[in-house]
Amino acid sequence: MSFIPIALRLAPAALAVASPVHAADEPLLPASLRAIEGCWTGEGRVMGKPVTMAIRASLAALDALMIVDAESRAVDDPTDRYAAHLTLGASTPDGEKADPVLTGYWADSFGGGYAATGKGAVSGEGFDIGYAYPDATFINRWRPQGQALRWDIVARAADGTEKPFAGYVVRKVICPAPAKAD
Image 1 (cartoon, rainbow, N blue to C red):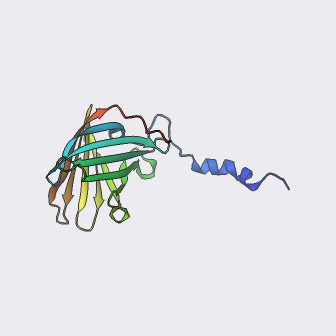
Image 2 (cartoon, rainbow, N blue to C red):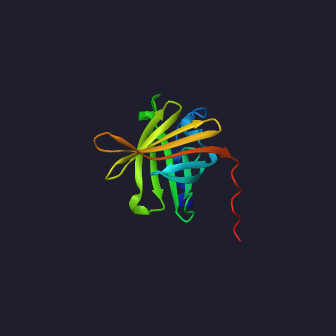
Image 3 (tube, rainbow, N blue to C red):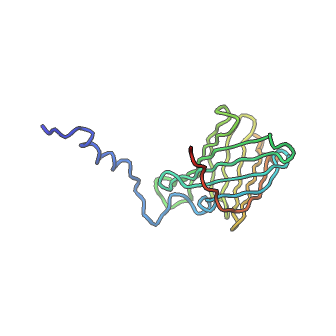
């Protein structure tokens, strides 16, 4: 019997299971998701209220996911703040050459009771993803346009009617350096 610890004997098998099989020239995320990578600032409205918006979108998990951190402030009351943390991903059915199904997870400054999973698809030059809540499904429509990004959110009722909830127009900026820990 070998004296090699079992963890070392199993390590190669674990690596084989953890490694996704995909061609190096085929990114896991569609171009429309990758187009939002970077930092963005601008303005918008939430339920009719003017806000400022800052977004930081970065690749994660070996570029298989996009992480989006968004922060807004009401223009008329800077203490009225909101923050959301989104995880976006994509998959294709059985690895086929098909349009990807987008998946997402929404968590925000309202806490865990308002977190939601989402599903969506690439749409034109952007992508749409909806998060179902008891009162409505909130459809997020992302439309990157070069150095600008439009992000609209509508509340879709069970009968299919849509009502504007929020909309932002932001411009790409240089990402600020991360804060140093003391």
